[in-house]
Length: 273
Image (cartoon, rainbow, N blue to C red; front, side, top):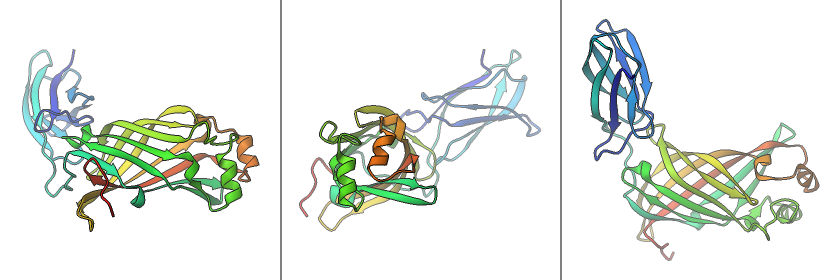
């Protein structure tokens, strides 16, 4: 049996996952703490009878405090609590379709070499779209990267990386990422969860997403900017270490850092520039 129960949401009824409920007694001592689930539902353990203070907090939202009555059996009902964004919060792009601008977007993979240096590879061809939802956390996205566009600055190595021993771009020409989940973890940062398909392997991946803002561009459109980061483990995508050695980049780490700088343009099509 739960003690104090309730649901945390924003205007319109959309849930606020990971909102934190803290309950204190009349002396200000914390007597319970609980975290809202994906539906915004939250509940504590059974509580001492009497009047207590419930405080709801979530990253990017103003805190809400309420007095609550706990029954003799340790239960109480908080009801629905609506959170509002903090004053001065970053303005998000309008809902609707937005296209990735390949000309102004980059994907960089970085691997450690010998533990003291880095090897970087740029994927030059990226495309896709972001369908921005209302609220923003309901946004979905899909991106495609041409595996053959990998560029480390050394053509012999690039050709080997494209070969069947490594990325095998003939068999697996497209690297894809598809997301249908966003979770806010800061004023302008989110965790974007999705699935990455690389080298014939599909794995869940979380991108740490930072929003840079939106506004008009010189070509008559409206665009927004994001930076995203994640780390991939080479073994998760069936990349053979022996192939790495033969490619001339032996002694690299098993973890590869991915950095994406993405610009998206509002609408179903990219404007002519």
